[in-house]
Length: 179
Image 1 (spheres, helix red, strand yellow):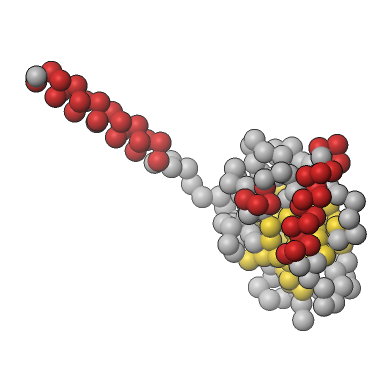
Image 2 (cartoon, one colour; image 1 turned 180 degrees about the vertical axis):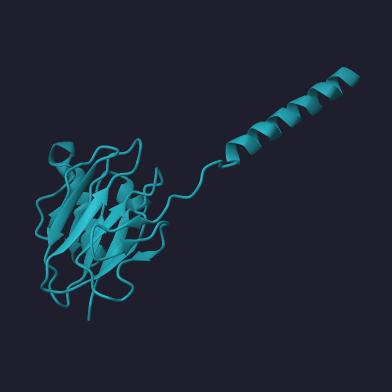
């Protein structure tokens, strides 16, 4: 009987140790990423990145590890009528991503995402849609690409990833324009 109790206590201790090891983290948070010029990006989804209210002309956005999120969910403000550049750095180690700049509201971004899935891998999940004002190619892990567009005053812009499942997981951010 004592051996059975010892077995269960040892098994329980081992399960607890493995659980703690698996959940322990052990890594550090990613450092903030500097923008190529004119602005800055913060790390950690749910944040905004840009010039702290001052208009910017370019910024870097990254994938947030393997979480199917961008590192920021708002960038800007960009100046209407002036070229804006977004550099997308796919820092994922396993996932391909793209970045599309969409002119329109959330209904439009959802429609573009759905059309992107239908466009498929051969089109880099980028649909032929006038709402897509700029886009990267389908980027392998560790790849980086820049896109530029000229925002129109009064328009609404978002950036999304249209790789199937990524948009619905949260890969969307808002682009703000200077007043």
